[in-house]
Length: 389
Image (cartoon, rainbow, N blue to C red; front, side, top):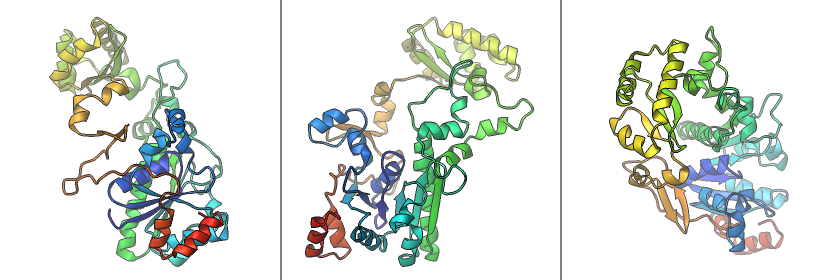
């Protein structure tokens, strides 16, 4: 993506993760923060206090902002707006995550930029989008997955909804969905010279990907209660089972060949013909599997079932996952400047991964970024003196 210039006005997780993917593939990403607190992520997350004591940004910030340039800019000053528009005139993509209308009030919205750069792709990431009765409401990941019906489906029968330690709305919705929209629009801009405003609502994205729950609502039985759906606990071939040492085994033996292999290995060949449409038979099979699996520790099942290739895996803790031979072989985990993080989660055969540069300190590239669009040293010094940068 060398040659793609991206202006990133976003903070925290969704937008910075999206622009991280672009930066890792060679795009020039200029992270623009205000001259006050800037991106709150610099002081948030596990390890932030220790990092601050050492004069560093938080691990959370450093993990999401490698390979980016940093510019501090006061967009509440007219001179700051002019700096932004000058940068935008030569940019390909802009990401922002303010509430609807904020960028327009600042004078840097899509229409203002399109007037000077018709090919701009301008992506707005919000919780509920630019339109609709909830457009101006604030929210976080828990709110978006709650509104879209996902949170209600996570958990065990009779329990309260379980909060996942994975920001599904932020990452599926705010990050990956925005990238699909942006790259679609970038291709269109290259072909026609006309860019696009990309309106991404994280709640929309979750709902749009809720394939099986949405299908279930259109069946005579409707959507199953929490923890009782075909993919959430009712099926014995797609479930989580406790082991003797209070660990867990994940079974995904949906296809009959995998289910038959698993039943035979567990000494339960009679269950191989279980009718997976009969609730009573499924319940009996699940209880039988649970009794057998509970007799041995996780290490035993890893040794005996995983090699059979019947879609059975241990439920690993994250500290175990990052040290697993599979992920090590894939080189997905990297440790740079004392920070364990993930490399891009895909491999391109013709373009090896680019060199990774650590996240920049706030405003570290301000002068270089402005020089690249024609500002003189005297002009930059004036902007700095006036608190614009």
